[in-house]
Length: 274
Image 1 (cartoon, rainbow, N blue to C red):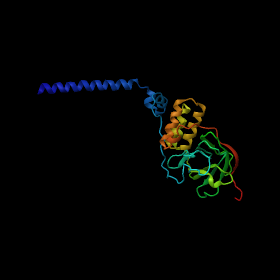
Image 2: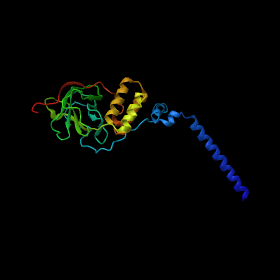
Image 3: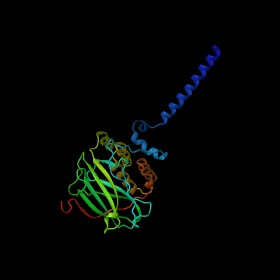
Image 4: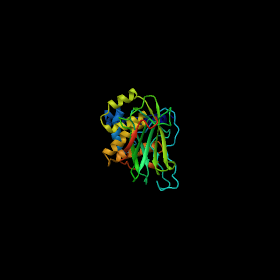
């Protein structure tokens, strides 16, 4: 019994030594920057086919509205089975620090020429503080609508919620046939952690993931879309975009192209009668 026990202990010590040697070798081959700075790992992750970031839903209350437009009946405005879709988390509200944000909407191939964007204060969802009509692309894809920096009655105020809507105008003579999506924005100041992380960025490709980890949807989407437009053939950025939309339940449109849209046709912060 004593001889067998000694042999078992010896085998255990040999196995433990081998395991420690392997672990030490792996640590020794890692770059110090990878161990100390998680931001530097993002570029390495894409080379290995690893998901580089995940959007974290912020701790704000879900909002009403419908990010997916209803079917349009009695018209060939959009193909059957297709709808316009607001690019929002499934909470239907986006956190932003931007006073003049950019919103994204998927518009399927359409015979419509025009869409209408409206922005409302939470306390008055009947009269928009900003309204504009835009020319839409007929080929279909994901369009961006930017609120201009000279819009009257803006920027968005910190700590306030705003409702926004986008309507595809299928028949200008009968607006009851519009297909429409609705969502919400909430403007909050950037956290100290977010500010510091952005200040330490060495490559602008890190920016979307930093915003995603902080829960700022509008900035995540806008910065990633800008990178994709600058690098249309970058497979890593394309995968990031798909992963982001998959994270929030928008896998149906994750492969859709970004389209050049939407040019403002008319805009006003004060509508007639106000």
